[in-house]
Amino acid sequence: MKVTIWNEYRHEVENAKVAQVYPNGIHHAIKDGLADAGFDIATATLDEPEHGLTEEVLAQTDVLVWWGHKHHKDVQDEIVNRVYQRVLDGMGLIVLHSAHCSKIFNKLLGTPTCQLLWREADEKERLWVIDPAHPIAEGIDRYIELPMEETYGEHFNIPAPDQIVFVSWFEGGEVFRSGVTYHRGRGKIFYFRPGHETYPTYHNKQILQVIANGIRWSAPTRSAKPVYGNAKALEEVKPKVKS
Image (cartoon, rainbow, N blue to C red; front, side, top):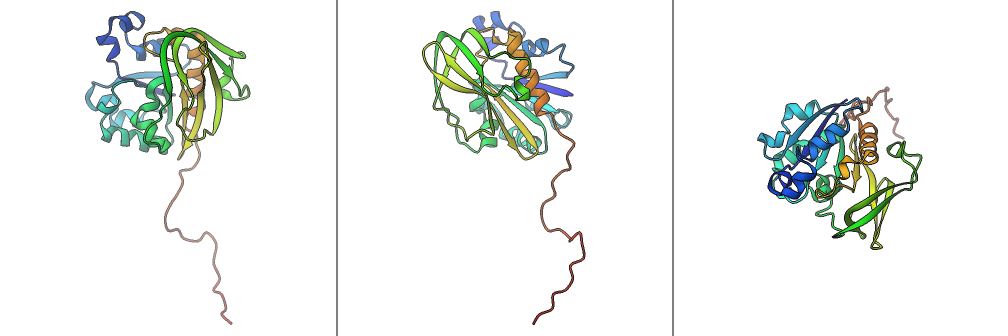
């Protein structure tokens, strides 16, 4: 399975605190963490030509993992439309953390913005598995506990998900739908909340397990491509006798 991990890759360059946590970038931390998962992994970043998401790259990508935060507006609409069409055609999409405000997530969900409550207060996060039968929760116990993370809180302004896999509780009392899925066209989408750039979340083996599970779940299926528009009858339609 061919996986492309996309990252803005600006925080790590501009912020020494972030660089200390992710010296090679969030994209490489995830790639290295999934090294034993059996995927063929490539990376792409915002400042590469075409954001690293050329037509050729996307055509070869089974699942795209997307991390974004403060530079959503810098993503070219042409590239967003290119990714959008690939998802409709069956490419899987894993949307991480602040990418809930990315152009591609908003376009696929049909929302102008996916707002929520937030704060940075080094709070403990407990991600509860509320759908233990879901493939994305495979190998995960009742919950994942992160000693410190950025806090997100409801209301999360998203359409009703197809499935809710994880709900987070934070030390300050907030709760949040942290793992949700959608289907758009032939493509499957998994939004997974944890991953603020100043915390070592993507070094956590359970978080990486969930991302790996999400990649496998969202991989393209071999179903027939839908056909739209005017179509010939499969069977003979006999003329009707008018009375």
